[in-house]
Image (tube, rainbow, N blue to C red; front, side):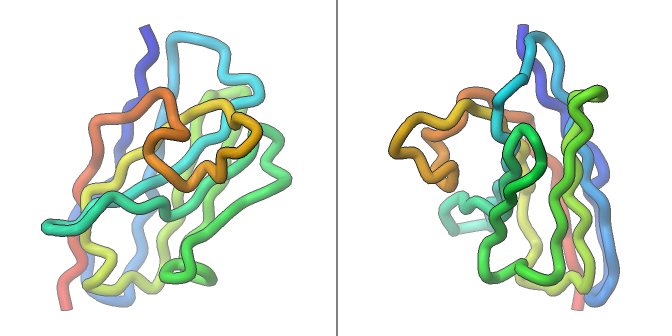
Length: 126
């Protein structure tokens, strides 16, 4: 049974930092992308960042570029999202996800991913 368990969310003031963690278990994740998504109230879920299995390639949404950093440790089946210079508009439920990339997939869509965590709330106060 595949499980993704996020942790590290919470309440932080604008300008502060948080580090989200996602521990994956239940199968081999070799070649799997790992992604972080977020969903704010009344908005669609969006891809914030993703990383290839090797870690050599990453993607960031324009809204977080330069502030967030995604990383992974395959030996621990763990992916992190370091979030700095947080803004109130970063407030959302953050989800980690994992999936294998098919030929045409951008890995920025929900349906590009096979497994999802339960989400962790991040609230940034002004």
